[in-house]
Length: 393
Image 1: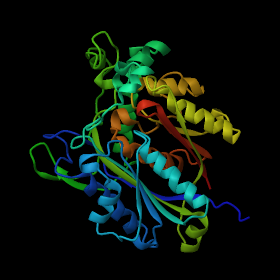
Image 2 (image 1 turned 90 degrees about the vertical axis):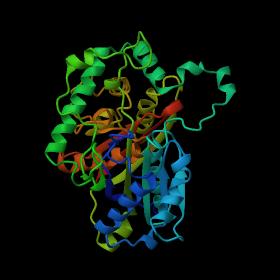
Image 3 (image 1 turned 180 degrees about the vertical axis):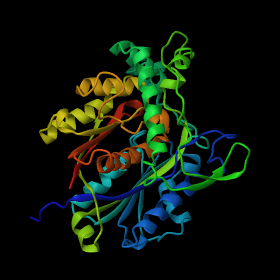
Image 4 (image 1 turned 60 degrees about the vertical axis):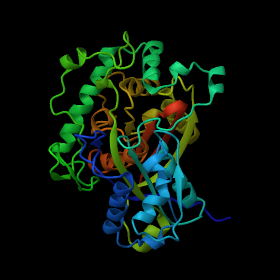
């Protein structure tokens, strides 16, 4: 029996993350399929050894697959004028949709079903609002309180059950913005962000090459004065919740054998992935359980991982994950979200699962070059969690 192939990450690019706002969002003149075209074209431009027709398949994740995102995997590829012979596969796992795409592509490579894959993710939370067209099965009420299923209610319940304070949650947001600003100003995102023509507040055309949500001067005092976002006596605010965002991201994954044959460089290889389901009213813990299961499967401990990207769906999610893994107690975290997270960078639902490994690989290469292992982990709506492990080669 042939030895299992290795999957390496050749390149990853994304658009900046823009506000999902009809008057102030920098991408309000663009469609999600157009954002995907931008990242696909950039991958081929930066990696001329790979031609579009060489791609075995394209996986594309989005959480809300309706409206402009109805089969966006296929429509975006065709609307980009790319080869019709290349098949596409839309993937929905809520927030980790893009991460699931990476796993599907990596496993196909390792199983020798093909050598060249693209995994991508996109979400336009302005044109395709969260939960748009969703019709919950009434029978869910037989098992769960429907009032606890929305993400904001989840965050409040987690805060209460786990005893995570508002002050600790605000520290996560504060340091997320500070780190994202520092990374942006130092040009650390430049290699992953593809400039896109968008619109400023006045409607003038601008080149968008920076994430729109980052606050240059976050204020703990201002956060402390904000009203609860989801229930009158709650503690979760807009500051400690990831904002509504628009963006796209794509990665080029190859078998190590094919990459060497084509003379392509790479820095990390896929070392494993793990999906895990959890209580849909405590969905934030799904990321921890996915990561924990993956580590146990690999015979590793959290301390064996040098760098983490832990999704900041809400501050409480990040705190629950790092505390349960035993890698941190409070922000600022030593080796977690070193360039900020979704609270500052934004969270286009289906895109984030691709962005996290892209940023992780760049952090490993440029910020912590001695790192051997990095892990990206995400919670997802209704209890879907996911984690991927990456190893320096």
